[in-house]
Amino acid sequence: MQEALTEWSNSLRLVKDPLVSVLMVTYNHESYLAKAIESVVRQETSFPIELIIGEDCSTDGTREVALAYQKRFPEMIRVITSEHNVGAHSNVARVIAAARGKYIAFCEGDDFWHRSDKLQRQIPVFQGDPSVVLVCSSWRVMTPEGALVEEDALASRHFPRNEISASDVWVVKTLTVCAQRSYVQKALHESPLCKNHTYPFGDAPLWVELTRYGRCCYLPEVLGTYVLSENSAMRRTDPLHYYWFVSSCLGFLNDALDLYPLAQGEGATRAAKIEATCSRLRTCAILGDFTTARAQLSRLKSLKVTPTPRDKLLLCAAHIPLPRAALLPAMKKSLELWRLVRRSMRG
Image 1: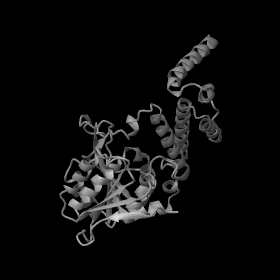
Image 2 (image 1 turned 135 degrees about the vertical axis):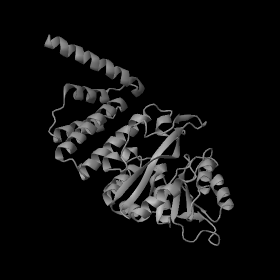
Image 3 (image 1 turned 90 degrees about the horizontal axis):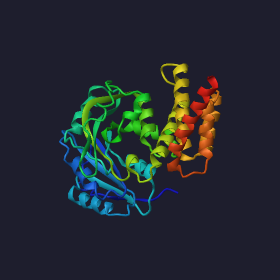
Image 4 (image 1 turned 120 degrees about the vertical axis):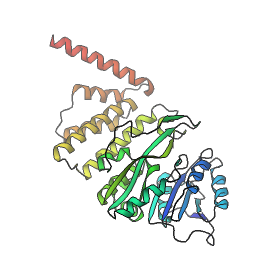
């Protein structure tokens, strides 16, 4: 049963025909949300925009912050809530469904746009070429305290292209994206990847689908700021959360490759599947995820790859009942020992 939602908005003052709907999902972002909202309402544009905030029953003061801003900017802001927490996937889906603009842009409640011309830089790209379905950019990285970690995230990754392909979706940061709403909704309704809610993210499947519908353009500018908040994958107190997230990403990558082979051909697709499967096997060994590790060995065999002794050792490591945080150095020692044994056998 779908959770009933409540919308807080002023229909008498709300902009009638926004060209862009900015979508801001938020949960327990009390310390960050005001800055995120300010960065949107301060956008300097030649076209009308709306900001839709999806507040998912936070346990802090996030909802109060959102409602206070809605009262301050009734011509622009709508707040969507419900009586119970609906989860990230459903929260995103309901703000997308509520959007009225031809284009939608994303800015989560713990990030912000430091460029007031962010939207004004992106929308003309669509207007100049109807085949463009998505426009993204580079971003900078900051700590919650405001310390700059990285000035230009993609510059350090040497990403020279001005167009995004399906294999590039990992460099697309959600806070930089602006897309055609009709194609986003099409993907959400039709794509098996977008309908798979077992992934701990919903953006990468969407970007993959959009690359199939038209051109996805990259602007080599830094238009947004990604904040390493407490909810970020890289800042979780559980040291194994990062490896769980990576394992999920690799699972998604294999699912995507099964559906959509690479343009380079069957050989390149098979090589990418093997690499993703081997990487996930290593990650499962760290996590102690024996079931998924065993599935990776089966997948290697289906790809006509004979598992190596190292692969089998990783499977055993996934089954060892040790504290997982202590497993990584133990695995490294085991692999070093195995190499020594192999060298002595050759000698």
